[in-house]
Image (cartoon, helix red, strand yellow):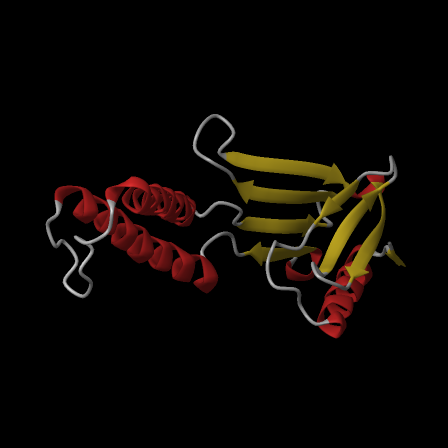
Length: 181
């Protein structure tokens, strides 16, 4: 039974880089926002910088704008961390002859995303490797109707050998061919 079902966990937005950016944007946004308010009120709100000497128009307004933008972006990233957007699992079940792709989305009626494909509708496992400024290393589930369903999470690209090993293991488990896209 254990060798008939394989489940691969997918890490969503709860990664170190997202925590880092949420905290950095929060601190930077609050500092810029306080600098802008300080230039308007002529009160020293930041202990390490004297921003009362800034002219409110245009420097103070620009600082408030960037501070608000940064603070809002940090709130958005924090919300995706709280809801763990993108997390889930891929389940390959030989007993039921199904492949399930399960992910968490934003709150609402489509919070849980469930894609189910019968094994006899799957043509192959595909690998796409592209280098350059935005490198992509993705494993796809290639269906007979020419659709390609990505199975790997959005993250830093794995090494090519790790990706090939993972794809080969999956193709061997599902008794499918492996192709380069």
